[in-house]
Amino acid sequence: MARASAGAANPYGRTGVRIVVAGDRGTGKSSLIVTAAAENFPANVPPVLPPTRLPEDFYPDRVPVTIIDTSSRVEDDGKVAEELKKADAVVLTYACDEPSTLDRLSSFWLPKLRKLEVKVPVIVVGCKLDLRDDNQQLSLEQVMSPIMQQFREIETCIECSAFKHIQIPEVFYYAQKAVLHPTGPLFDQETQTLKPRCVRALKRIFILCDHDRDGALSDAELNDFQVKCFNAPLQPSEIIGVKRVVAEKLPEGVNERGLTLTGFLFLHALFIEKGRLETTWTVLRKFGYNNDIKLADELLPSSFKRAPDQDGALRPREIEELFSTAAESPWEKAPYLDAAEKDAFGGLSLDGFLSEWSLMTLLDPSWSMENLIYIGYPGDPLPAFRVTRRRRLDRKKQQTDRNVFQCFVFGPNKAGKSALLNSFLGRPVSDNYNSSTEERYAVNVVDQPGEFLRINAFYLCSSDVVSWKRATELLVEVAGHGEDTGFEVPCLIVAAKDDLNSFPMAIQDSTRVSQDMGIEAPIPISAKLGDLNNVFRRIVSAAEHPHLSIPETEAGRSRKQYHRLINRSLMFVSVGAAVAIVGLAAYRVYAARKNASG
Image 1 (cartoon, rainbow, N blue to C red):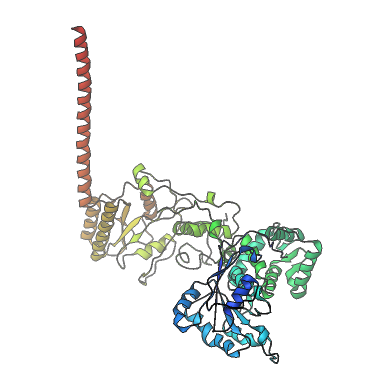
Image 2 (cartoon, helix red, strand yellow; image 1 turned 180 degrees about the vertical axis):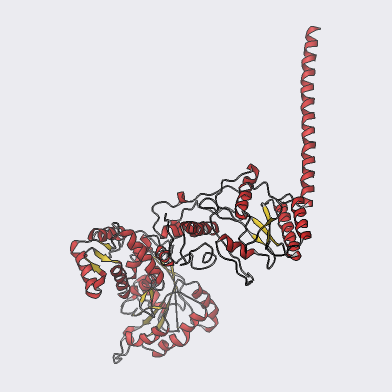
């Protein structure tokens, strides 16, 4: 189940791989590089080689390799550090005939890479294999195992001899392979298991390939998968062999219908364990994943840009299963975690589900599209999204074609903001006050599915004079900002806690100011008593007619009046000019007639 085509075009989106070779003086760095490039052992080698490029057809992946030699002089430490920071992979050398250079890897070079925060694959290379003492009894595995346990960034260890031409091309092949087919994103070295994101991606691929949705890949489905990923069919004997290997190691990996998801995951773990990471990476890349095991950017339509059916409830377990093929579950953290209405069991209704998705699309449309693809949306996802026109044009046309609205909530402490959001989500009002220190979102449906609120609603506590003063200041600030920038937004004032003893003068002042600024009088509500006075419907109405509830400051009103006067003056000048032109034309006609008659 893996035969990648050696002659395939570069599928990695890389223009090249940069490999930096470092190590102690005399460990064979330069000889290793020259022999790899020229296929001859050099008689004389300069202290430091210039960058050496291996052609793209040097290795089967057809990605050019640039090898950077480094100096061993102490005074060149700074330059070496800069090269290491630019590396895609690092080759660390030691001399097989000098054990002290091997010790220096764990005492100096590997800690140095960590200090420089060089987080790339490391290939440890023992050079001068032909000079090693024949009496040495320890194998490479015995020598390197303790170091590899301590430094997990080491991908491969290999011994070579430039003089004898032993395993020279293999050194840079493994380095290139570690970059193009990295272990880190796929496999946890500590637990020796596939990493969660890798499991999620492979699960999505399995589901997409399980065409009959019976929970197993039949022989035909396995063959289709093989052709899609590796451009070559599996022979019947090969399919039997694959299933036999799985059944022997993991009986539940195969059933009468074919290869199960458990068996599919086991196969990939086996490939990785045997060093065949390119097999799993070929599969992932064929299904659109990048090196972070997330959908590659090019899979999302470049034209998609952001401008400023189930009747029951989905249980948390079902939501987790829905997104189990995504890079991560998108609604498990803020701002989505507690944003939608849920039932007593934490389940999402259809309205709640659509509201969460509307919020995700509003805040991060690319992330929304990415998750749509993750959960199996077929074909081009772009038609599933609609880009609305600018809000400024909505105001000009005095209507909007949006069905998802945003409502920013402003107000001082203890003004009842959280209580209103909880009411929007059908949650009871708490007697305990908890100050909100971070942004919070609440999404729900008003009248028709898919409506999500967000106009500016200013909160005053009708039982608190200070609250009203602060709400007024905020209203003036937002109105002034809109007038200065041209981004005016409709505003409403909500008088919360109407069940408490109110201050009549504050209510009168708030009504007068709102009327002076050209917006609706404050809407009295009591979240505690459940008397919301149709506030959410009124918010939607204001959003649907954005030109009617835009507050004006005194300065803004004066500015508009001035512009109206200027425009009116210009109109009179234009009419006068038109009259003069008409008069001139009439004079010419009269003159012409007069001359003709004379």
